[in-house]
Image 1: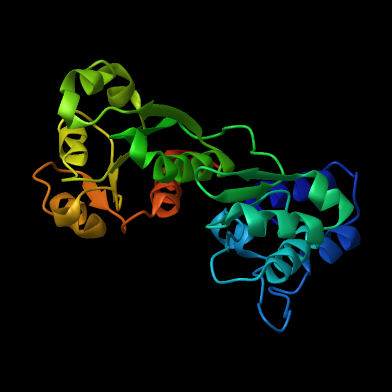
Image 2 (image 1 turned 90 degrees about the horizontal axis):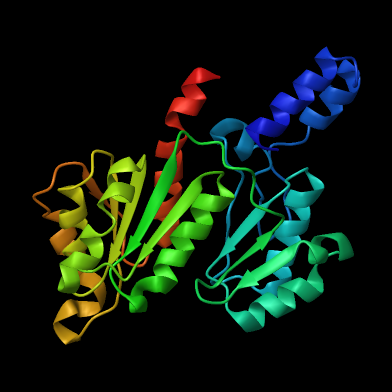
Length: 260
């Protein structure tokens, strides 16, 4: 159950559309369900505002389908599954209930699946997801879909790396208007510093494993971003588009939570 679902439940009680006993039964779900191989957290959405996300790598299709089924049975409207290849996604889809399978969508480039539809954006503005090159789009799309599933509007700015600085400068208005920015780059990772020097909002830098030998699988970009001279730049791990998108969505919703 997400926080917005809890608010709807309480409004239904206040409006007389549901009895307190019925609401109690809905809320009294155990905090987790023990499936033997996993313990899905059924109340994370109430505690943190975002329900549990399923990390698909290292889990079998049957395990993922079981976790999804448990979360959906507990009232989760939307579930994000990261790091899942197309073959496993097909197997997960086959293992879901008919209703859940009808709500299942796979996105091949970022290797993620969603069950349910993204919510209507309710953040304070929008998150700009900026990718240095086309080779970085797998990570950028993981970040962008994460942001959308967490209820924020996304503006995608792709192929805006520093090798052609004019491509980035053509989007200064979108950069300066964002509430949070995800800057994704491989090679030397300079994009994060350049954006950090243009933006007034927090910048979450995400290095990718894209690059030639001396890029060391993304370590060079990671170290460059960690040593950025631009203020307001924080850094997530290599290829962690999900983590960058999650953080950006939290920033975009910070003012919304305070006003509730």
